[in-house]
Image (cartoon, rainbow, N blue to C red; front, side):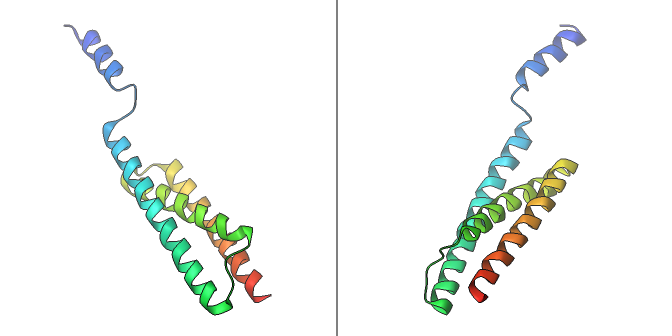
Length: 109
C-alpha cells in the first residue's frame, strides 16, 4: 500500500466524523438534558410554591430549552475548543438569560 491508498482508506473510515467528537457530543446532550430537567423541576417547584400557580407562560419552555442547548454547546466548547461552539454557547446563554428575565418579570408584573 502506498501513502495515497492509506490516506484514502483513512478518509473513508472517518467520513462519519471523529470518534472523540461524537463521544463528546453525546455526553454534551446528556448533560444538557439533565440540566434542562433540573431547571424545569426547580422552576416548577419554586413558582408553584411561591405564586401558587403552575408555569403557564411561553417563556418557561424557552428558558428550559435554551438552558439545555447552552449547556450542550458549553460542554462541547470546553472539550473541543471550537470557536463556533464557543460562539453558540455564548449566544444560547444570552437567550436563556433573556427568557429567564421575561419569565420572572411575568410573575412580578
